[in-house]
Amino acid sequence: MSKFKKAPYRGAGHGNFEEEWGVHKHCSEWWYLTGYFYDGAGHMYSCQFTMLRVKLLFFRPYIIMLALTDFETQKHYYFQNITLSVRDITIDEHTVAFGKTAAAQKQANGMRLTVDHKDFRLDLTLGYGKGAIWHCDNGLLQMGVGGPKQTTVYYSYTNMPVFGTLELSGERKAVRGKAWFDKQGGPYGLIDRRCMWEWFSLRFFDEEEMMLFSFPQSNYCDGTYIRASGSHERLCDYTITPTDFVYPDGQTKYSAAWEISVPGLKDEAYTVTPLLKGQMNMGYCELLAGIYDRQGEQVGLCFAELLPGVYNKKFPFTLLKRRRRFRVMNEYDVIVVGAGPGGTTAASLLAHAGKIVLLIDKNPRPGGRMMTVKKDGFSYEMFPINCVQHGSLFEKLSKTLGKENGSSSYWATISGSAGCFTRIRTARSRAGGWDSNFPACLKCSALSA
Image 1 (tube, helix red, strand yellow):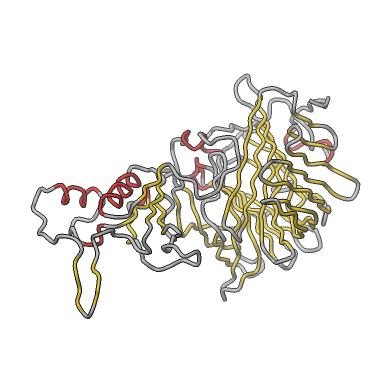
Image 2: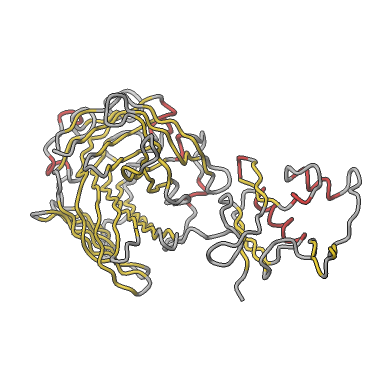
């Protein structure tokens, strides 16, 4: 690790931006970049770079978290690594780096982000834009609960023009877009549920921004409003109302769409809707959403970072069991081949148990032999028809899966903890398979020839 003197944490009496860039004693802190950009064909991508230094008892592990979302292919790539050794860590006056894998470097006129991994590479130049600003109470954020140790010092570059290159699937592309860089840290309780947050960075197309740091479980919020000129003010008078939820692992609850009210600022009311759901990282959900005004017109983009402690009383450690490689969103615990009565039953029971299941079949619709075919004006049932007897296995399975009438709606997908069923539809998707707009725990598709 490059030598860098650890500074004391001073809270409200913090130093300048250069002094607060570095490492602090007895603190958890992170260097965090999120951005979106477009290639020459207009295809959209988002990226994340996070270097996290954790204060955990007597340990100070370092964690690198990288993500890329390709909105054209709807794939989310994610990488994480953790180390207790500082051998591969660089944190100095200008650079934060994890070995040769990723680095964020401050330069005279901006920053440079490089990511070098076998699945994708980034080399981006980021202008300083409006310059750095202190968030909340002149840089001090109370982390949901009271006390001088339950705080962080927080500043950002909120509107950074981006250009550079992306290499993905062997193809190198020039890209342009916008980014937002955060430096934040303090001695707060990192694993204290009361201190977990929902963070929203609203990036309006008119070059204005809002940073909303919300702790719904603690009934506390803070934030910042940044004008196009670069002037800014503290923003605490707002409400965030979730309108949808997702369960990425079948049991852990995260909000997934919101109505945001900011009385007296701009259009005052906005709808925030994810462009793509399911962007899970290491135990938390991060996504890019569209911002829409009251007329339904898109007026900006919003990154949201959602921690599990907000809506879950116990931390879901199962979310941490993620292999250290890039992952795509469509990764499953179980793949069931054959969407007949047996396959559909097995897939539904597995989904009901919280597994993420892919159900596939050679045919363009589910059902196997349990279907009706028409020929020469006549209809033929391909499966025996009988009356379901009380107490039969079929009745028990139907009750287990929430379909007590034993009807053909037995083929259903279950949405994890929500207990909500959606019938498998037979419509073709643009890829030629079944419509795959199902809850996260069960996806269905037809095999291509």
